Length: 242
Image (cartoon, rainbow, N blue to C red; front, side, top):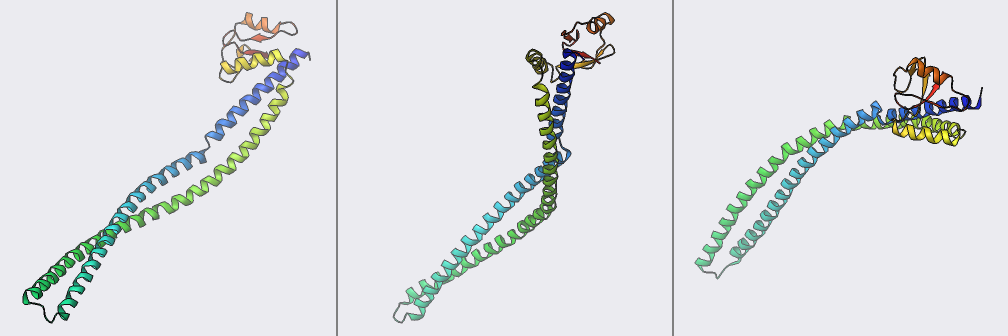
């Protein structure tokens, strides 16, 4: 085997490894488990948004309840203080006692109104709590599925990373033995032609563009002198007769 033939054979090995590396990267990026995980995580994000909305409504209701409780407590203390003054009043005029009695009644009525509002707020919280519980129940199996898929993705990616590392190392070894001019030409073509800079000539067909070459062109390629490099007249790739 001539040096040219060995170089071209090595060039095909580099091309095959480059193709394998691209395919592995594509498979790694498009793992079915990763796509499934993306869908589950999208569902979890939607549930989290719903849960955040419900939690915000619950917090608002709880804040309203707290505010009402504080107002009720203040009214209760105020009424208690007035009642104590009434009971202790021995020299107060009838007008003062009546004013205090009216205020006690007013405070009692106001507290009753606030207690009704508090009860309504508490009742409004029940469906929100039920909504939150339902959202958590829906999210639990999704979280479990997401964890399973994350583990599957990690394992698959680890295995493929090992294959990529092996292919990349083999590619570096083969490429290092190519003549500089041939390697540079190959890299230029590979960058321009979607990752394929060299192709096999199988019969009359270029395995890179899958087009037929003329019989005359094929004869010229097969009759090239030692050191000659053929290219496909259709796509421009380096052609290696096999």
